[in-house]
Amino acid sequence: MATKKRAPVKEIAAAKKEEKQAVEKELPAKDNFAAMAKYFEEEGKPEDAARYYEKAIKIHPTDRTHYNRLMIIYGKQKDRANELRIIDAGIKAFTDFYAPSTSNNTNVVKISKKLNFLVGLTDKKGKSLHDPEPISTWKKRKELLLKKSKK
Image (cartoon, rainbow, N blue to C red; front, side, top):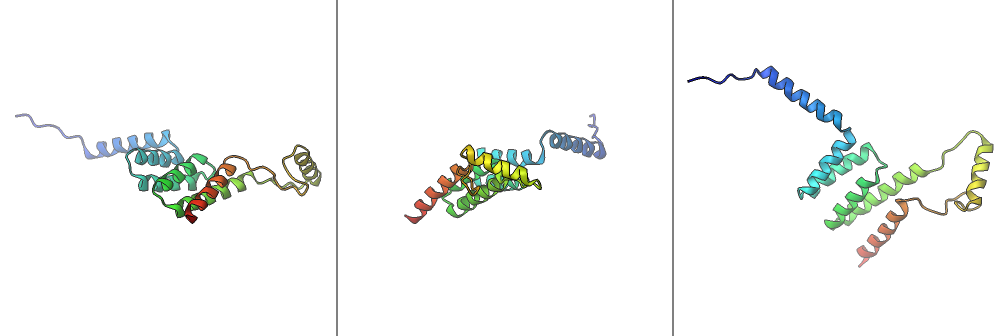
């Protein structure tokens, strides 16, 4: 009877390490969390999916897909508090992202403000008249959520 040769432990460990590194190179950390969240969502484990979407948001706070998926997950679970928290976090992240940048050159600031007013993007004081996407959608969602929670 022939005995099977076993692969040395060091070779097995090295092979596993190489495989892990190859997978990590293919997907950046943000995508690893997003991929795990999607996997758990497809497997019917929304709590685990939500945990990974939360991690993905921390790495890339302006990816609207993660906020939208979390809102859907919490909405399906009837977890209004967490859904509202995610809506507020998303609105804040995108408001900060779209906030006008400041310049040391006062002429540039004056011309930018005047141009924005002339094309109808701001009022005379420089306040934005329109919310960019996804902020406007999320504000509407928040209004609907607050109406539902009052009932």
